[in-house]
Image 1 (tube, rainbow, N blue to C red):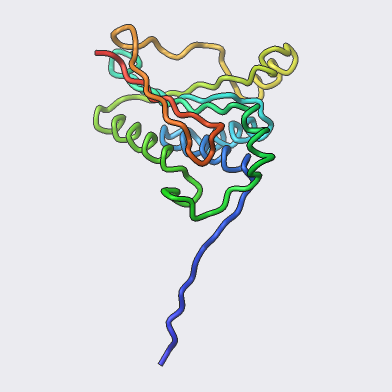
Image 2 (image 1 turned 180 degrees about the horizontal axis):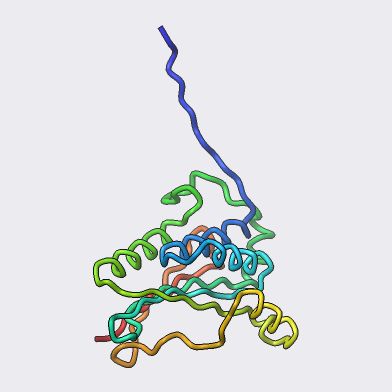
Length: 180
């Protein structure tokens, strides 16, 4: 008779790595290519990126939905002193993904699929990078930032809901839908 065995998988990672993972997940929900995802993760690791948004447009080319992930780097510095590591087993987390990201990302991806929308994405560099012309140019080049704006909103505006990442308090998710 064989003895049953139970295997568990646990993980511990630096808080910054957990933040990077959330940006990775967001971009993957919009089917952004792996090389771009890696560049964004590198930018997050160096605190050069403040936020990333993924959006979807209808057949008219106007935005109808958007999900933005934003990190407050000063909050991150404070929280890293208090809780430098994130440990597996947090309520609602699946692998390294927060429940808030999973819900927002899945809803975005499902809406894109159901309504046959086209996706795009944008990056906002952190304030310290934007205020330094040399570093701003370096990061814009490194991230292949074109300088063009995201498409206008269908109906001229949007409604917004904000979700705080419960276990990564320095992060917020903004979910936007056109008003039409």
